[in-house]
Length: 86
Image (cartoon, rainbow, N blue to C red; front, side, top):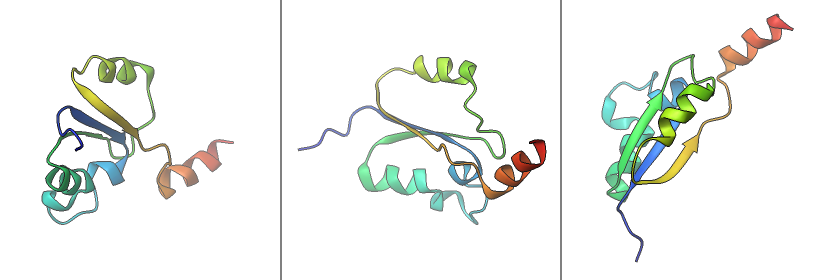
């Protein structure tokens, strides 16, 4: 049997935040939380999930964490923006 204790931390950009959903209950972290019966902490920042070291240190201070999930893929808009900076 799998333990449902502990928290799952999700960090990322607008996809993680749920920036394009019509209702909060259909954000993927909320769906997973209901299905797995676990607490999810959604740290999605639309356009700003840039992996700052300061935020990593804060995430590390959260107690009873079972898993960290990092959305490392930028949104299409961010990727296009980055091309203009080169």
